[in-house]
Amino acid sequence: MQDTENSRQSILVIDDDETGTSALCSFLKRCGFTTFSASNGREGLQSVQFSAPDLIVCDVLMPEMDGREFLRCLRAEKYRIPVIMLSRVGETHEKVLSLEEGADDYINKPYDPLELVARIRSVLRRSQMYQPSLSYAWMLTAGDLLMNRQRREVYLQGELLQLTRRAFLLLEYMLTHPDEILSRERLLEIVWGWENLVDTRTVDTRIGELRKALHDQAEQPRYIETVPQEGYRFIHPVKASA
Image (cartoon, rainbow, N blue to C red; front, side, top):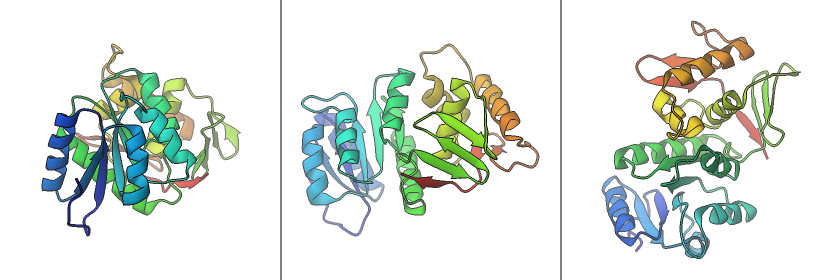
């Protein structure tokens, strides 16, 4: 199913929903991408070996080999191809586990195709800017800030910060998506999940908690910038080490 225009950025779509996959591939082609597909994780790994896609869009729930097992195998083989996970599962822990296992982003089904394309382009830009990938590096640094994702610890100028679990997850997502405008709705979906009865003001509260811990000022931010009418952006350069 590969497009002949090999000069375009290529996307591998892995999903057992044949109709949905066909529709998504057609839409992505109209957006200027080369596309090809696989119906499960096992086929996806074979496709990666022969096609070397620029990015992978992968469903979580599939037969034979599901999305998370595919992701673990992909990272175990040291492939740094960016991966966006798709799922109807709205549980926050499912998103967190996928991101910790090396996913670059996560979006719930049903999704807006235009939003997915925006995320694809954002992840592709980020993957070209940062080496190694921020998404599955255990150590992230931004100036005096250090995050150890494996130990779930954050240090500022060498001092351990006392962050709530939600604040840690929020900071982790922002560090792995630097210089990207993140809407309150998107942060709410990723960090809290829509199954929780909270609204976007909860995001503002946790942002305030992070700013206080980081000694960051909303008026003159070093780390977290407020983008009026849109959301927040982590503005400090981020470095990663495996």
